Image (cartoon, rainbow, N blue to C red; front, side):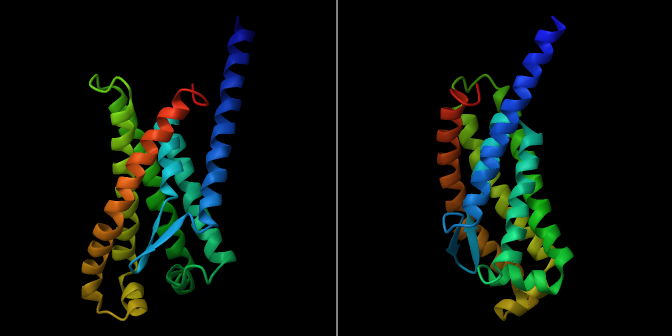
Length: 209
């Protein structure tokens, strides 16, 4: 009996690692291709939060946090290996590597973790038998959290860099951040809502059973 339980647990862990590896591969694929960042306004909108949120929805907050960490790591590696791809991020990295690491990593880890917690909470509600509503809500909220946390970190920790880079007064950084959050963040969240719901539903019936 113990051997059967141990074998089942090992099989579960292996499948979980494979799923995580697939999502990590997608994160890096998006990060290093034009599919990952869409230029909207002064800061690029991103689709890379989607595999993070999907992992959080299907595997829980810990998986979401880990995938969020890989999201941040992909951004960091891109700045190091392709500094011309995102001149704004490169500017922050040049100003303070530690500051950029914090801005790139912490918001994405928090986003993945909180998306997972939200998904767990929504699964416990009886109104959503199919799971689609919960997936869609998590996709939208998770994407907005990514936008809010990342732009918020820029506002709180790098206002002077943002102001210098874009040639505006420091007092105007907040307004610029709010504009980007609205014009880029909301459409991004709507797309995430649709994609996360559709993909999570499909995977929940197959790979993530």
